[in-house]
Amino acid sequence: MDQTNCNRLKQVRAASSHAGCLLCGSQNPLSMHLNFAVDEQQVVHANFKANDELQGYQGMVHGGVICALLDSAMTHCLFNQDIEAVTGELTVKFVLPVPCRASLELRAWVEKSTNPLYFLKAELSESSRLLACAQAKFMRTK
Image (cartoon, rainbow, N blue to C red):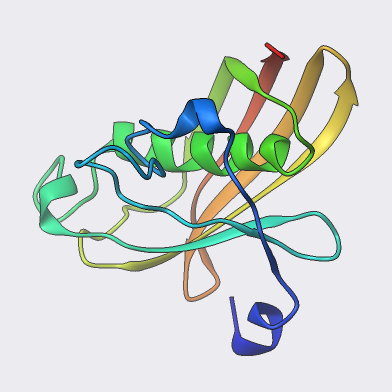
């Protein structure tokens, strides 16, 4: 996300029930403290610096962490619309290995909504190079 886009983004606030989240929770001491913002097209963005503690195979971020990052971005798309929902189905495509020390960009957006179901997509990239992508179905809880 370049500086021009940063100036046009609005912070996305997570639901209060999400304070203990491992990825974005303000009250979880192990949280990655991801911060999400939304642009004018309702695409949610976050930047994240990976580290060696997230390793699966040597030098690569664990696949489960990648799934969690993509899922979290999509969840924040729904938070942006004041919707709390849980993941019902998540399909992830691992395009390239994600280096442990990479500076990563997350993007996610709602493809279709038919309350109580929501269909979303997300991408994880480094320097505009796609590393992983996902699509998911979410079910509204509140």
